[in-house]
Length: 571
Ligand code: ADP
Image: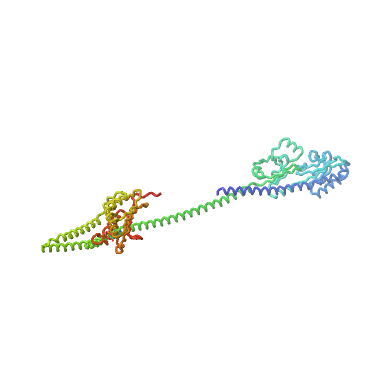
């Protein structure tokens, strides 16, 4: 952004420079044309004079002097030139428009003037110099007077350019005309007149002296220097002032007209616009900074609000977590209380069931003992044995119930080890082999080729499997071509054991209470209804699950899912 003022300055500078160039060209053309017209205006005069008969007569016979003088006087007056005069071949003025004046030209020897010499050679002459009588500067134009192709004299007009100079001065601009030697002959600045732009050599000074051309005391060097080019213009220093200059030559005269412009305006404008744009850019930058600062502040404020909100949310979250922990603790405590209560309830339930289960055989035992006593009293020992056997059977039944109960309440042994499920299945089937044979039951066994490792108590799992096989065999009593299917399959994280049969299926009265204790359909004390509930407990302790139900076709089906000790790797 800081480059902008420079660029603006540069653009303004070149634009303005171009403007200046254009203007200076126009001005120069104007000055040149006014000068040319001032000079050319009188060019015809000496020519006309040279053509008059009276001039010829005067020069050839010496006659009609007064008439010629009056003619010149009139012509000069009409044309508005400074003086009009005739020289004889020796350079002596023989007739002049100012013949009546005190400082008239008549009799003056002007043979040293170049315009005279030029005309004597038959050419037109042009010369700028100060006059010899009163030293008034003027421009002289001469024309030869020919009689029979012989130069008999020279007609000359003097033009004073002071009016033109006065006009230039009034214009307030700086313009001057210098001759080929660098002498300033016309200038809008009077103090520069006859000053020289280059130091004059003694030869040149001699020539000037000979021609009586300039007031020699005024011919002083005006220090001037061209410093650099600026487009089509040149930078010059004259005296102590710096200008931009445009020059044009006037070939006819061997003169150069120079138009000078103060450089200050260019620099003022360039600097002015650069400074203005600098200030504007500065303001823009400041505004930007201010806005950015404000935005930053706003963002910081928003961030602070956001941070505060996050802190508040965190505090709330911490509170909630605290509360949740407390609730959790309360819940745990409540749960423990519930468990405790549930245990008590279960104990109560179980006590009723156990009492019922035990009371009946105990009552029977009591009855049998009473009848034994009666038999002994009646001295009939022969039936005693039979009754005692019944008592013994009932004792066995009681032992079975309590044995099973012990197994139910037995805590997990925690003897966990990794074992291959295939071995456990095979081992339990070996133990049941005899029963399968007795009941003529078929076995459909499908095991995977690779070992299926799980973590747990192998003996307890075998207990579960034996129980399932036992139940299946029990249900298959009376079923034609009975079979039991056993399949072990492998999932990504679990092993699945399927045990199914083609028996009558699970009785509807059992239904959903399949895994509850003391639920049995087996008569005559064959079952106590604890097998499946114990199995359920064992599988749960191993982190698995057991489900049972009826198959679509016929028979019951049990599925055990157990977690693998090492989950299979995918792929
Ligand atoms: P119990 O074997 O002492 O009866 P369980 O808990 O092992 O006790 O079994 C509960 C009941 O579930 C059985 O009495 C029986 O009615 C039913 N049951 C279990 N397995 C099967 C099966 N494979 N087919 C039909 N019913 C079954």
